Image 1 (cartoon, rainbow, N blue to C red):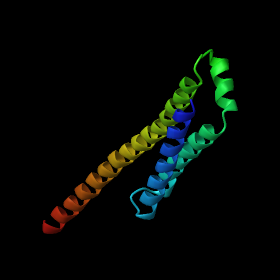
Image 2: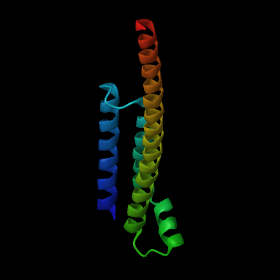
Image 3: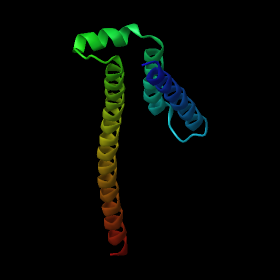
Length: 118
């Protein structure tokens, strides 16, 4: 179990470094980096403290504590991915609305231009 916890700790540190580097280079926006940093910090803390994992494994009836960690990792990233799906859906709706508004403005401009020529 210690080896798995060390691997999770190393991966969470790597994720934090990657997110902070991407943030510094403006590859990711601050509001999106918060989710990834929160996930990385949560995994880092869980890899340091064994008691919550032992309790969760017992609560879920799992015999292996590393399986509880893998389940938590999956749940944390599932929440992050869900959050980004909501953000992408909102952006798509905003893009459609903006496209429709632009089409209306182009139509009005075209109509005004045709009226001037007549």
